[in-house]
Amino acid sequence: MNVELDVEKRLQALVVRDRVRIKEFFIDFDKLRKGWVGEAAFRTCLGTLNLKFSKVEIDALVNKYKIGNSGLVNYAQLCDSINFVFSDLANPVGVIENSKSTANFTDTEKETILALIGAIKEQIVNKRVLIKPQFQDYDRTNSCHVTGEQFRRVLKELKLIPPTEDLY
Image 1 (cartoon, rainbow, N blue to C red):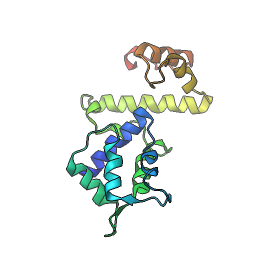
Image 2: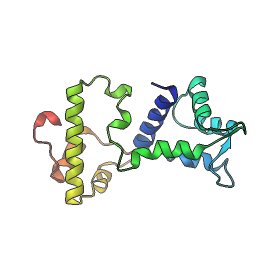
Image 3: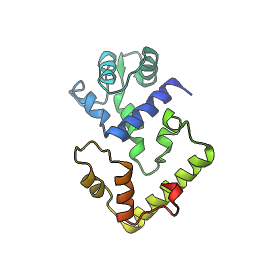
Image 4: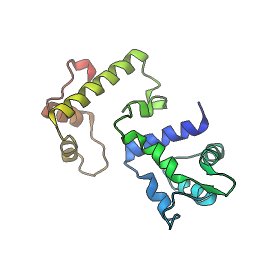
C-alpha cells in the first residue's frame, strides 16, 4: 500500500472517530482562503493533529499534494479526500478496512459485519430515525463514546436489533 494512502486512511479514521475538521487546522495559515499553504505550514498543520507521522509519511503527502515547484501544497485537495468518508458513496467500514483494528477479524466476520451495518443503515434511512440524540443521552462527557451496553440499549430502543445475539 502507498505510504500516503495509509496516512490518508489513518486521517480518515481520526476524522470519523474524533469528529475533527481537518480544514480548520489549515485556515489560520491560508488567510486568502485559496486552498493552498506553504510547505512549512502544511507540515505544521499535520503536526498539530493527534497522530504521529514519520518524516517519510509527511514527505509522501507533501509530494502528492504539491503544486508544481512553487513550494505550495494544496490542502483543499487533501481535505476533500479525507472528508470522502462523510459522503453517501463511502463504505462505513471501508474507511478502516486495512487498519490494525480489523486485523483480527476473518473475512467472513468482516462480511457479516458489513452486511449488518448495511441492514441497520437501511432501516435507519427507511424509518427516518435520528440516532444521534439517543446516543447523546448516554454520552454525558460529549466524548462521542458509549459503552457496549448503552449501544445495545439504543439499538433496542430504536428497534434496530440484530436478528441473533451473536451479532451484538
